[in-house]
Amino acid sequence: MRRALLNGLLALLVAGPSTAGAHAFLDRADPPVGAAVKTPPSQIRIWFTENLEPAFSRIRVLNQAGQQVDLNDSQADPSNAALLRISIPPLSPGAYKVIWRVLSVDTHITEGDFTFRIAP
Image (cartoon, helix red, strand yellow):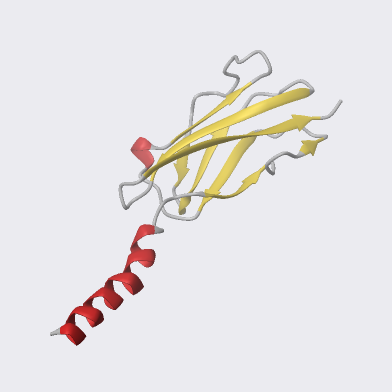
């Protein structure tokens, strides 16, 4: 009995971390997080560690004054369910904040933000 209980606890410990880590976290972005770019991008692309639910995943891009400057067309890439993108018009030099909120296919919501700069 005691051995069975110990084996059961050991199985829970081994299985626990693998199921708890299934959230969609930012993997990489273009432009890169914290980057200073010379050429203004035409879109922001963010890759995540898990596939996303497109209907519940969004990106917004704000200027230094906190005004939304994207084209409000945030969407998941049809050929890569872990890639979210949004179009932006030609931007002036300055700092920009990218805010994201996503729902992964395992129903976990994650959100975050990062900045990038367009150099003069």
